Amino acid sequence: MKGVAWLSASPWAYPALEVLHLLGVALLLGSLVVLELRVWGAGRSLDLPALARLSLPVSLAGFGLVVLAGLALFAAHPGEMLANRAFVIKMGLVFAAGLNAAAFHARGGLQKADAMARAQTLLSLGLWLGVMICGRWIAYV
Image (cartoon, rainbow, N blue to C red; front, top):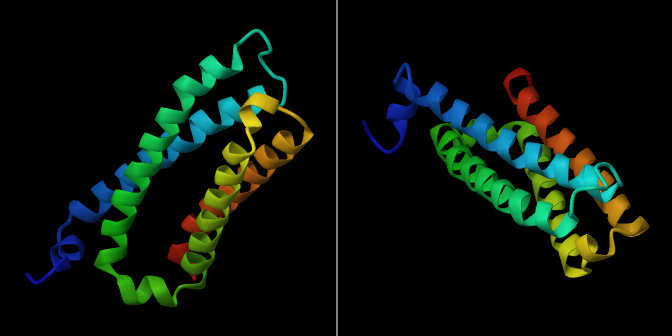
């Protein structure tokens, strides 16, 4: 089979990639939510820098898995995905979440844990929730 057509033809490859994609989402968002809750003041007994040293690499590994599996899933149906409004919105939200994360870290949000950092973490959660909603919606639009 040509290119990545085998992904669609295989009874297990595409579903396995979806599982890897979801595992990446779980790693990314699970660790982010814990860190963002700490920025909001939950678990004050936990040292924020130490928690960040643990959770940020897990988040990055999850994001890497999401990207790799997502690219393979996209490659199986690029035309359909680009024509799918939910997919396009999802990609825009992922881009916005990345910009928000870059701005958060560039301004030292973890060190400040101030009102702006809390606003950025709230925005982060909202953007990632939107990504998840759009990701599920892809199959239905």
